[in-house]
Image (cartoon, rainbow, N blue to C red; front, side, top):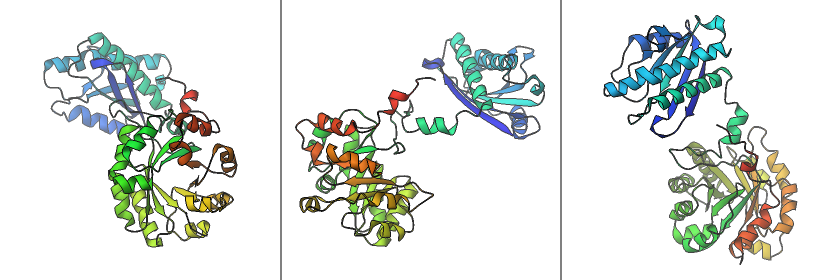
Length: 394
């Protein structure tokens, strides 16, 4: 039995990033501790943690440098402020009761520390590594983070080095803006006028992809990087090939036509699942969407109840009564249901009450003289952005 903790504290070259494991001497951590102290590695020599020479902390700690030590200047940062900060933090955790005193001789701790080669301020190296070790140890012993925390943060978090976030659709409802325009220039005009909202996702529409090619997907991404992008391929053949094409252009989701052969839809869903992106089955002109879904080998992530423009002008009604039946098909996989075709703010509420998770809107927004106002007409029916409920800590 052992616990794992992690923490990043500080800024600049002195920033501290600590990975930590704590467990019993007689267990796996004890074995790793013994191996680390007896099998030395050039450039990554572990050091037994001491508060000062001849005064180790307890539980004993092994401080392991993550960054290769190339000279004595690097070594002094590890053997000096980093080692002292880590060891003092552990001793203080015992004094404060986080580590039970009866575990001093039973537990050992392994701490991996990051020391930037250009770090120069020893006080900050000490301070940041002290705080990071304390925080990582507390997190380890309290099993932080819990699933609720991860779920709340995972689709809003932006890794500081990566520089962008990858959203997922776990908090419906969403407004899907369909860029059914002919050129990237037209798409750009729409996108630059959109208000910032977690409830907005973007569709590279079929006309746009047919006109500009699949590169239209990444072009949309370049204009608005941190948004969920759907490629409305309406695939009818070579399902795996078209998924791969859209995936290479950074699509988060792609749509297959429900009218396609079952083998094509099955391959489409399989490939999307393999790559970790969303699959969408568009049921335009599918007489019985529920029957179609039940005939598939695996279910898609999203089912779109789509009334086409020609059907819309012909007076065909929406089929929102099917939403409940679609959601009851699977008890193990949560499918989202999107609705499309002539939706306006006035009838959007009816779709949401029927259980719709995604409201797909094209012309009402893209052809509006005031695009931002048109978008806000829909957003006011949805829950607010998640950042308004976020407590900014850590």
